[in-house]
Image: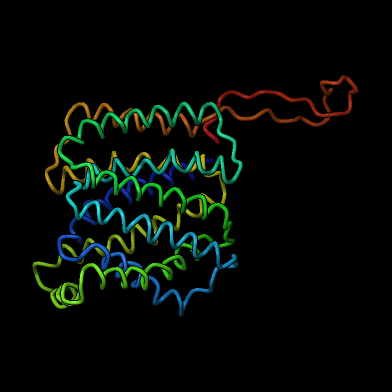
Length: 317
């Protein structure tokens, strides 16, 4: 991964970290299932009329939209609505990174390097330390729901990698066509028409403006910008290379929740967060592979082939 793409992956982590307090604000006004439907409907309507459908099989479009749009966010919003704090939600959801690496190994045959395994292990230890420290303030059910959301995200990552869309931004937008109707049906069934109507009727009141701002952030920054960059990176690199960057999200999420809601992190969380950052950086950094120089004596001694020389450690992956 080039330095530029590592920076883009880190920027996505920042955007998604800020997404958690934005989501918490939106869920104060919108019921969770309806918010998923509304979030993607705001993207789906202009997408259908303005954006060409990505040149991929329909089954992969449905898989990406179903996993990333329905499974991930339905479970995540349920978890947060059930009382999971936004900072802790950002931590638990990052179980998607090791889920992605394991699933990509089994389903796509991607090889996990020793460095990636060590880096992910370091980051997972940091996440576990934060989660164990914070779990005392959360019930077990919301945490389990967030883990289901993480699995949905991992499955979506693998599906996005397998889809190999020529234009990843088009895939990002078109996956939004999948969730609205199923999620609206679930919302009508479990949340009821009255609650949906009340959230829409009061959407532009002064009390609801923070929720509206949170919803717009989720749609524009977290979805269009965040997933646009993320799916672009997944189209260029193996899932096991890109996925570890998602472990940076809880560091941003905890800090953002501290600033917005006063969820003050303590020394243990900050120390464990450093492990997360260090593990991700370690997993994404490796020595440059040996390269061939033409016109030099080859290892077999025939004098015509290339010879391999090793360079110093580089910042590319």
